[in-house]
Amino acid sequence: MRLENILALSKGTLLGDPSVSLFDSVVFDPSKVKRGSFFIAYSPDDIAQALQNGAYGVMFDKPTQICDSEVAWIKVDNIDNALKKLLRFYLLEKELQVYACDAITLHLSTMISTPSNFTSIEGPMSAIWEKLWPLEKKSIVLFSPALTDSDIFIEHSQLIRAQEKTITIIEQTLFETSFIHNDTFYERQMLSPFFIPYLEHLLFFYTFLRIPFQIKGFSKMGHFIPVFTNSRLESKEFGSSDRVVIFEPLLELIDEQIDFLDTQASWAKIIYLLPESMRSHLTIGIENFIFYRYTEEVLSILQAKSFHFALVAGVDKSVLNPSRSSMRQLELDF
Image 1 (cartoon, rainbow, N blue to C red):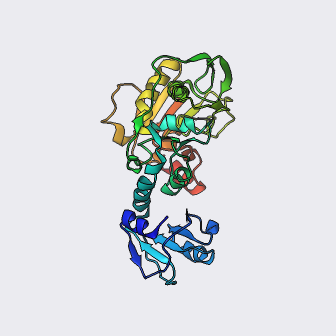
Image 2: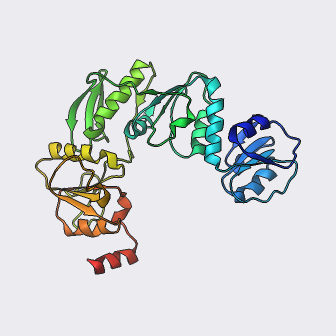
Image 3: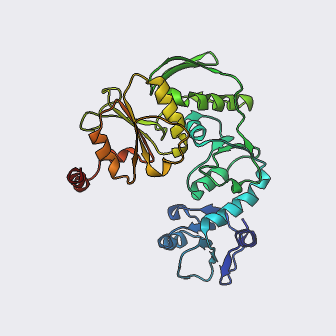
């Protein structure tokens, strides 16, 4: 990567007059820097180690002491924005096939084995760079605009969706599914039937683009997360109790999940804990809505209510395990 290109694309300011004009690699971890690397310094504290390991250039956006005139010091307003501009330019020659999808489909794709010419991306810009930079020409990329800035790519298409059902559910509970796809039986997958339509579209996408795939199992979806508890809200083993708190961080999914629970568990007593900000945005009407203003309120609400299932929106399961001091305060407030 040439210094002049980095400056032109990132709109950065070169400090000093270094003799270096070319870098061998872009590196984010100072311990992985080698002689000739261009180091991206999210933290000024990492620069000394990067220089010691042989960095020829440093990009930074925080106050930094310039300590070596032979190094190319490039100051930018924002590192992530600068990297986005660099990626956008350098990915042109790779002629990537880029497809956009929702966050659920993207997370499912990370749990299915595919060849190296297919990748799904999310996370910080450093992780995205390290996934996209080494891709072969004409590789296929899947991303979610809800999680990753689409401006990284010059253009992208929408996920190719299935027009008919390709998955047959054989047996299901609220949190597990046994199903058949392309004559292959997948038994007791740790995947709620809520996610099956998303999986159906993903597998159709793979089939349509002739991307080989292998389903090994699902875990840690990060959505519709069940925590089996006892009456004191202490976590129990999966499936060992009839009192379940379900956590969903993505508010956009709540309407759909409420409808799913209402249909699939009509026999159960269900409560819905939603942030106050959702009160005026809900598109469905249903009883047992409870709105909370602060995350700290969620635990005391759950303690005060009886239920089989409690769907909690906008917080994670750590609310069930507050610190002792927080727990004592909650009990006093309650």
